[in-house]
Image (tube, rainbow, N blue to C red):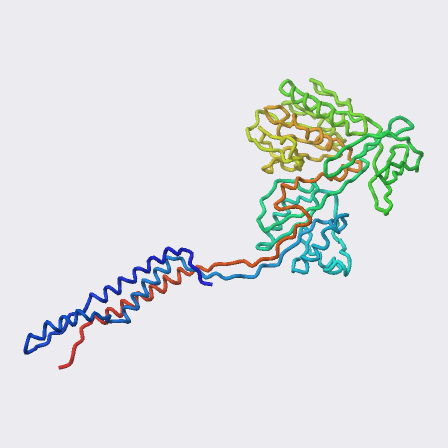
Length: 519
């Protein structure tokens, strides 16, 4: 369809009056005719003035066409044509087909497939689910999930950005749970063609850790997570005999196994699913904090946060603070080295044997404000880092990062232990992390024993306002719409005007040549 983007450019069409006026008034000189009498001269001149006629009509048309083409070029002509919209994509979180609330969106998913949408996994490779589904209609057969899933974070923000780049100009409908653990990292901007629909993550109960409490009892730490938050509670139960069961509400039966060296509790699921055994801890968790005079405030904040985090650990936690470097004979599980002096070689050698060594930034640091990227509720106070060091984190893995993707806490495994480096400090001049409610929870995730069942599935829900579209299951995404493209015709009009101008000049030059007659 032909269109003009600059209608005001058509005012240049008034220039068509110029060639017409030239042709009316720029008349060729009359021929000299010898007459016998002058009485006819005045009458002939008056008749010629009354009968103004256009001459060289073809040349006039060329000049008018030249002006018209230039006027249209000034009006920015274009040809708008429409292309049918490309096929849409439904991208589902792996494991969502086994979600209890999947039936809420099943009919909508079938409708989208019948309208031409492809259904894929929102995971690496964006694999099609059509081969794993029995049919497009829910009445013909169930969907079968064939994608292996784990409880690790899915980094949905980055995956959604990757999907938008992988399927350009296609409407995308993302279908995931609203579990906060899957929205790690920075929130990348998404195009308007992306809609996001979520299902509630549900709730979960698990055995976090266990410890012996005397010869006849066990102290269990039970975790419970829901969309509103995660809580832990301690329970004391009688120690069963070897091979006996511990039964608790909301948990599968726990099989107790004991040997001369270790005791474990293993959940026995009714469906035969295998679960990791939780070792019954018998020794207290000993933590040492060494701080020099410059890190005194850091040590006080750290000790308070560790004592708060100890409420979530089944075994007793012993925190000792000393202005002098501790001795290797203290058998510490954790050592927080808050000092400018380097760590002694004796303690560095203990890392291979299971020591967890924490060091924070040394020196004055640089003023580089940034927010700590944490999965916390919007009502909680954001954590701001005011200063940080410039130590590279090569060969280490970032556990905490800021909003710019820079590591804040990095870890380097070494033997059976690990070395942690905090690229900032807990001092108020460096950060407000010590004042945040998130610090005990962050430390608790570090203090959990490696042989526990792991931190249970975090079922906290993301704030729906952070998603690019309404997360209500009743929202139906729009059908693939046609896209309009515009072809700019100005170069063609200018080129045609140049051709007309050349033809006009050739014709005008030819008519101006004198005509010679043979005698």
